[in-house]
Length: 210
Image 1 (spheres, rainbow, N blue to C red):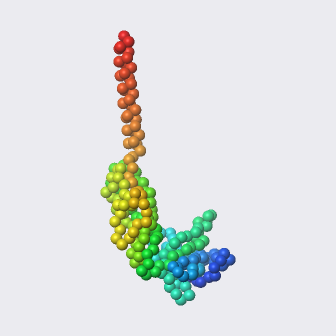
Image 2 (image 1 turned 45 degrees about the vertical axis):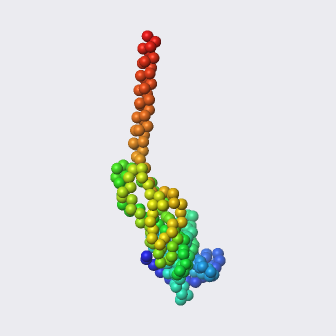
Image 3 (image 1 turned 30 degrees about the vertical axis):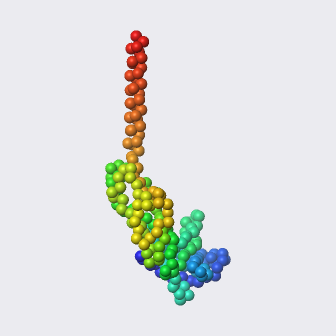
């Protein structure tokens, strides 16, 4: 897994300090540790680009006041208008302690069902997992090339080594639906058959009356 290093500057806690950081083009951050006091710092907005705008999961080395902290991105708050990051939370990693965190899902390949006219429907793009820090993956890779029309992949179908999945086992990850055109044609065909039967019945009734 790639480690992204952030050269951070310590800051005071509070809204006033956070506002001052943003005026300087920095993003206020908080690092939450396990059994330790939160560490507040700020980093240049540009340095967060490869960490936030990516479909990969990364561990982060935050360097502040001569110390280096091994952590992961926990959450990001964005400005409602500009959509720029205005606050970031990190979670410290500790050797020998489990961590529960959502990681991205990558669906690789073009499903057979899509090649045959089916529609791909994705239900989850991230999956919560629990594991040791050294077993954290960049993403979860799922090969969907053999998936046919009407088939799906559920959480229980995944086999991940040294990783516990923290999601409902019957949750659908991806499915290949039948083409809508085929469904409509089938329905029209059934209605047409009923109409023909009705016409035969009317004819029989007419003969009987004669």
